[in-house]
Image (cartoon, one colour):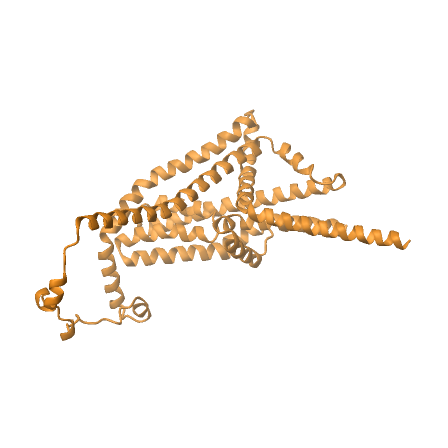
Length: 381
C-alpha cells in the first residue's frame, strides 16, 4: 500500500511538473509569436464584420465565395479612393503651411503679447526677451593675419590631393553606412506592415467564406465532453465582438459627421475629408483622435493661430462628449466592459505590444471577459 501511494504521489508530481513545463513553453512560444497572434486576432475580428455582410448578400443568392472577396476589395477600393481624393489637398496645404509657418508663428507671438503674456508666454519663452547682443572685447574677431602668430601662419600647409581623396572616400563610406542603418529598419518595418495587411485581408476572406469549417476544426482541440460548452463560449464571444463592431461603427459615423459639421462651421479648409478621416481613425482607440486632430489643426494654422486654437478646442470638446455621452450610451446596448478596466488594459497592451496592442485591446478584453463569465457560470451550475 505504501508503495502504491508513493507511486501515485510520484506520478502526480510528474504530471504537475509536466503541466508547468508545458505552460512555460506555451508562454514563451506565445511571446515569440505575439505579433502574429495579434494580427490573426485582428483578421478574425474583420472576418466577423465581413461574414455579417456576406450573410446579407447571400439572401440575394450571391455565393459566399464571391461575396466575401467582393466586400473586402470594395472596402479597400473605398479607402484607396479616399486617399486619392484627400491626397492632393493635403499636399497643397502642406506646401502652403511650410510657406506661411514663419508668418503664423509671428502672428502667434503677437497674439500672446496682446493678451498680456501670462502663463502661455512663460511656457513658450516670450518673457525672456533680450536685446541684441553686444560684442565684448574678448569676442571681437580679429583678421586672420592679426589673430594668428607668424609661427602658426608659417606652420599651415595645404593638404595633399591623396589625403583629400582618402578623406572624401571615408566620408562617403561613413554616410553610406549610416544610410544603411537608417533605411534597413524602415524597409523591414514596411515589409512587416504590408505582410500583416495581406494576412488580415486573406484571413477575413477565407474565414468569412466558410466560418463553420474553422470553428469545427478549433473545437477538435477541445475534449469531447467539453465541446458543447466551448461551442457556446465561441458563440458568445462572436456575438459580443459583433456588438462591439456595431458600436464602433456607430461611434465612427457620429464622430465623422460631428467633426465635419464643426470644421465647416469654423471654415476650415478640406473640412469634409478631415471629418471622414476623424471618423475612420476613431477605430483606433486613444491614438486615433490625436492623429485625426493634427492635420485639422495644421490646416487651420495656415489661416491663423486663433483658428488653430479653436479647432484644437473643438476636437477636445468632441472627445469629451464622446467619452461621457456617446460611449456610455453605446455600452448600454449589451457591451458590458468596465471603463476603468478598459483604460488599464489599453495602457498595458500599449506598453507590452505597442500600437498593435492598442488596436486590439478592447475586443480582446471583451473576449476574455465573455470566456471568464461563461466559465464561471458553468462552474456555478
